[in-house]
Length: 274
Image 1 (tube, rainbow, N blue to C red):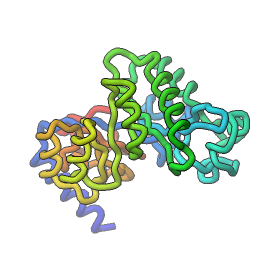
Image 2 (image 1 turned 90 degrees about the horizontal axis):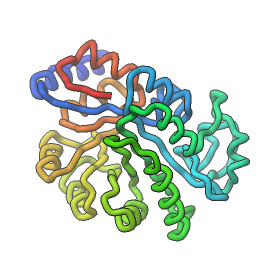
Image 3 (image 1 turned 90 degrees about the vertical axis):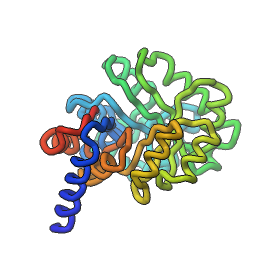
Image 4 (image 1 turned 45 degrees about the vertical axis):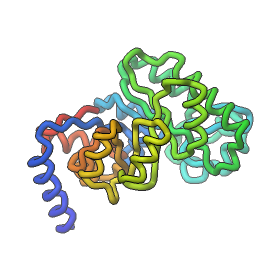
């Protein structure tokens, strides 16, 4: 416990000294999965009421071609039902309830919620297309087309709606069919020469990398290469402060309310937006 407090204090002092004018955008990961019932309307609504206007979510496709907001392919972890999303129908999934009793949300419902707010300015829509054998090429193209059409249908002017993935296939397809589409490449590696080069080779200007192994120098290099850097995970206040110290442009957080309260009370010199 003492080590954690010391580490956080050290990070705080370092950030204070080196990032007086830094601007960073925090966004609520799955609606704030460690504070709320992930990827449900109550989660997004709670983060919104706390002041967040930036969010991240995950999209899969049912057996009968409906887009549903679920992170895992298997329903076991988050719901009272067992089964693989991609092998179940919309009707079957609508019968499920989360472990906290909420309905499983479909993309249309999330988009209607976003439309009803009118002031949400940043959303990451992650293409959840793993295991890859559940999304062969034909199905992947159908999925991408449906997702792109629904997400962009009523996108507010000036809002940033990103398609994100670690599956290069989906990003390449969107890039080829919809020129100008805004995307972010997710990697389980740090921001470094390899991941910077991969983004540049793919023509993607946003990199979502892990904090572990990322250095300030690497983030600076990414910026010099014209990339926007988003770092994860965001499971603690220490993660948030480390991301600020590293120079990230965007930081996801699983504890949106705790992070916001901490930043306002302890790091007001960071130009944070939510």
